[in-house]
Length: 199
Image (cartoon, rainbow, N blue to C red; front, side, top):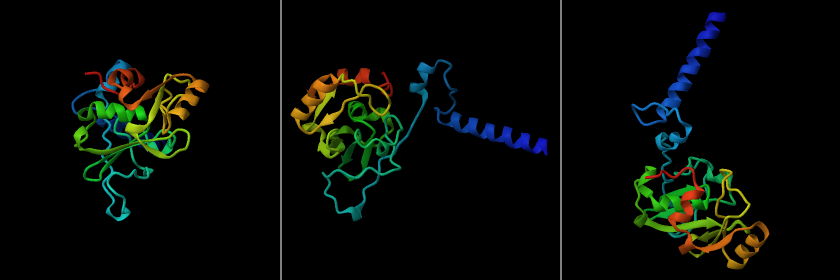
């Protein structure tokens, strides 16, 4: 009986190890240095296909599905509703993100994230208003950089707001600087995310 239990335990461990190894690029072993894992680990989160039965116009935000994965970090955006963001592509498919930082990171380097889409194919982008919980167009939102509030990955992030006055009130209470969409450059995003590959 002990021999059977030992075989089951060791067999299960071998399967688990194989599953972990498979998440890395074929033929590569996990890096010994943990800092190198980010460039080897490959999380593929496909876009959510369009739902013809929804009746939503192409430029309308979608409800975040519970099973949707962020294509940048692999997290589940539905678990972080105050931070969630999304891109709707011209064919109606949608990528959901766990935070504005990952949305901006994705748009700054779409090809790095195993997506069949290009930035030019994005029909609409939305972020969640941190105050109201409602979707707002990403290009009209205001973002607070450098506040004391941590995002879903327990890192600095960019709380988004539909009104500048709300963003300024948040910055007064929690610190940080208010940025318009055009001011959120790759230089702003790069130090905020450990998930963005450095090329």
